[in-house]
Length: 196
Image 1 (cartoon, rainbow, N blue to C red):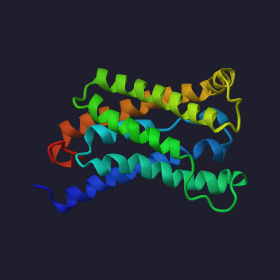
Image 2 (cartoon, rainbow, N blue to C red; image 1 turned 180 degrees about the horizontal axis):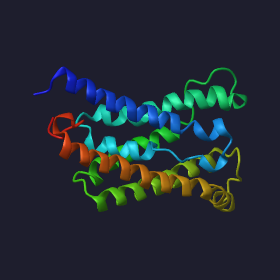
Image 3 (cartoon, one colour; image 1 turned 180 degrees about the vertical axis):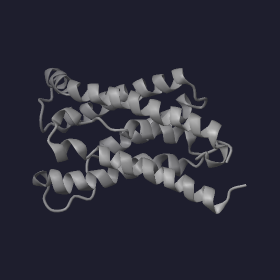
């Protein structure tokens, strides 16, 4: 039986995941350390939500809310010179890719174990790299609409892919192993039950 305290702790954990994900996306532009771009727990959060949140809307809410709020700050504080006025929503293709990762994560992580988490993490990193950079190329604003332009786009994105890959593996490991520890140590605080 769920008590009010348990419910508050569960929402507290969700809030903490959203906050950490949001703040991690601000580190690179705030510090000027370009090597940290795309190093965030966003992909891992998407997979974690897919695996553990019983209600589908919650699986989508944590990563997409993190993405939206951090984009508000990124677009209107750090990159405001690229927008005419206040930007409420940008880069719809990134939201679409994370939504796709969540849907696929529901199938890839129907049973959670280390090998499935690693496979899902690698798959989501590759999917994000391929689809978002294809969208950048297709926009026609940075690269020629040719196969050479597409190759140049993917080549230019390789350093970001390394960060995506590393952060997806690292944060997936932390989130999923942390959840396994919570399930064993504090079963009453488990954020989700697939049967719920």
